[in-house]
Length: 104
Image 1: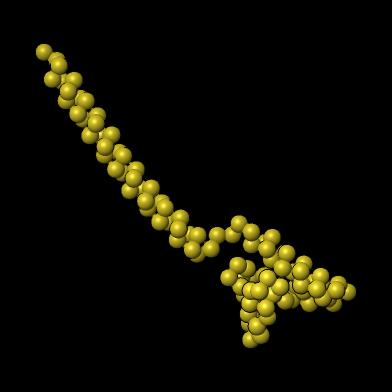
Image 2 (image 1 turned 180 degrees about the vertical axis):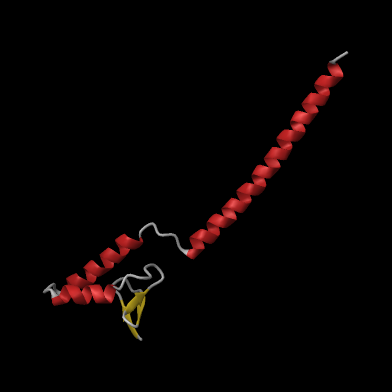
């Protein structure tokens, strides 16, 4: 397994020809850059273009941490909504009892 350090300082591991990074699993930047070089593109430009394409592909992709945060936020929201429903129900019950006491 080769390890390559990209221009932004992040290390990328290449295993069996497939690039794997935390942000771009499934996009092989090394193969893409090699293909550009084979087509006559300068090496620095090919690497920069590969990184730009990787960034464009992965922009807005949720990570496992994002999903975990979202689940926690949803659980918190659910708890708050249940409390709100019970408070509203108790308020309505109190209002109905109060109104019933006013009837003759």
